[in-house]
Image 1: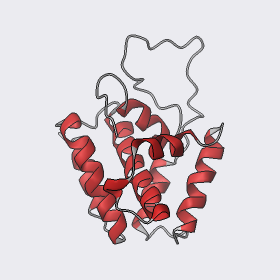
Image 2: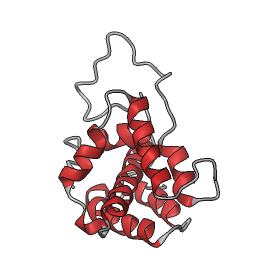
Image 3: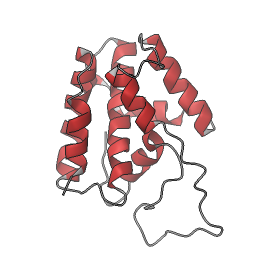
Image 4: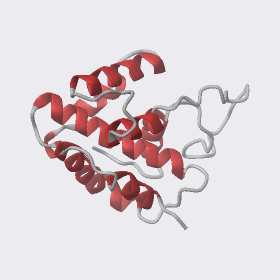
Length: 164
């Protein structure tokens, strides 16, 4: 069985700038124990994308502030995740920050950009049924938006309760 951590290692092993590698190291420090051997079946794919979103947030914030990813605070990550009222505004904000760090968002050979394409894919066309009720689950098994947003919600759910 492939685990969420296996998927994260595969993405990490694609390489990238030193700060990106350091962001991956910090992400693993945060998620490795809570995720353990959690499989990628069902909701694990979204959870992996959430952890990759955490890596991206650490990378962006460390780059902007000239610090190591270990010095990025939970409050800074919360602020980055809360920017914009819509999914599209959030995506644009994050993309603007990646561009400011020197990434060409059309370059699929850039490991940062290649991962961004995965975690920013929009799944809003998979609209939840009306009325939708998943109160019996810690997190929905179905994707309603991009992994960098939906996956982070799942990481913070009671099942994992990952704090940054």
